[in-house]
Length: 442
Ligand code: S3P
Image (cartoon, rainbow, N blue to C red; front, top):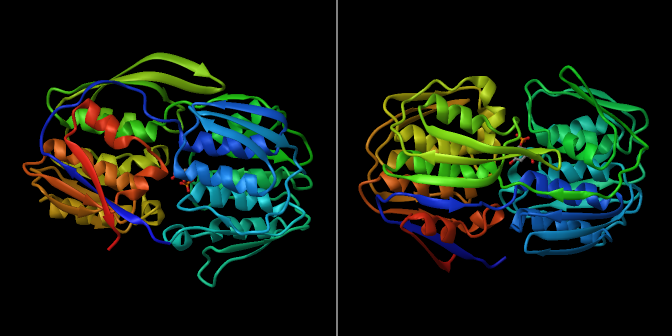
């Protein structure tokens, strides 16, 4: 497919100041469409993230016969077709860059009466899918992957699913959610154990749709055969998008930023804990619960950071925020050590290697290990880095310019649109000296 490349150029130095509300939470937005589609009745969503990943989910459900209005100003109306109302799509479902869409849909579609084919872009088609297809097969699903266990995925319909008890080898909310969604279609109870707590938006949202589930220690269980009832969902701002400003304002002297209406679900706030351990000045105020999800305002003011050994228990709770945290570590006094984070190697890019390569170009001593990295804080110089098409890496390096001695150029930033539309304008509005330019893809 012909597409243009996008390059960020960021002037060195500056401060971040002002109030902002970053776009809606990606995980919650995906789930609002998925559960809304298989509910009885209408679901009204506000604060929806109109970014490419969530639009891929909307498009897939439209292809399966669901009438979805919007998104318009963050509002989406999903006309649910009920648990058994989806229709097979003639065309394969293109899920773009979105791992959440592919893994959750794999579980949801394993229990349908029709066949489905799922594929994605170059990055998504490289990512491991056996982590969902293998346990789904033990539930009775029939799914084909490539020989390497990647997409395209061919899911056979009319399989009779039955509940299993699955002890997950990796702490993954996508795997957990995929199995719970398959469990809605399975005979008996589907139980999943998480080795460490992972984001629980699926469980909270099932409650919002009136579908029972239960937690028993580390085990989460649903039984098939119930019904979901359309509801209202107010999507909080994405703490993963807020993270770029939490780091940017922490590292740029003189900064003072108020992030409003940020989702602060405790399964997502590892980034706050890690930044606090590093000495960051964060104030969480106006804490409230909206539609079953905790929300707060977060004020961040710059303060010198120090390197830390990141506790492994915080890794799943901040899994998407490590590219930004690595930039914080590069600006901190001393060494930051991350272990127990091998999952970072199979995200939209190998986030350990790609960040280490970029930080090295900027003059930072960053040593990757199989399951983490050691970063020695230092002086960042200007330079040209490549995001490898990874949205979170592009935005993290953009923030690093706040402490660099020369201009930073970041290549391959087009995928910022998968999670954070308006990033350039919002960050420029706060004081980042960023411009974006497009050209033909090389
Ligand atoms: C997500 C879970 C996480 C996260 C991803 C979104 C979700 O993946 O990295 O961006 O919405 O469930 P894993 O569960 O595979 O760690």
